[in-house]
Length: 187
Image (cartoon, rainbow, N blue to C red):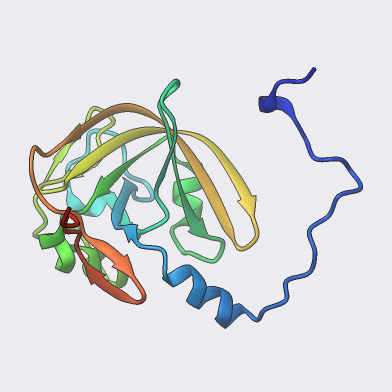
């Protein structure tokens, strides 16, 4: 018997054609609340150890998820047409910074900002020489283990080499086109 790790669907089984339009699919997806991250890596021509903010790039991503505890793996995805895709694809490392609720402006800067997105941003450098944003709820310094092109995105699987987290704080959450945070449900 094959283990589930190596199981593949029968070759004659195919997905049915979708019975919905892309806007409907987008609306359904928007109902899923996601955390918000900023993923950082080296800019073109930057060498490890350079500390000028222009040595780095960063993007806002809400596609972050855990994959495995052993080995420690996480994933995130980036659109095939993103201008930063070649840098993330070719790079050996990146840092995933989980944003706190009070970091909405930082989220917007890395999502829509032009020029040096790191100008005036507080960060420290991890062991890979990449920015760990001050005030982030958690961070994951990752080796760029594998990449999978699926549909209109590339899925990045990172092997976590180091991580850290804040002792308190609320997450920045995105759902139905709006930013918010979480509150515990009353029992």
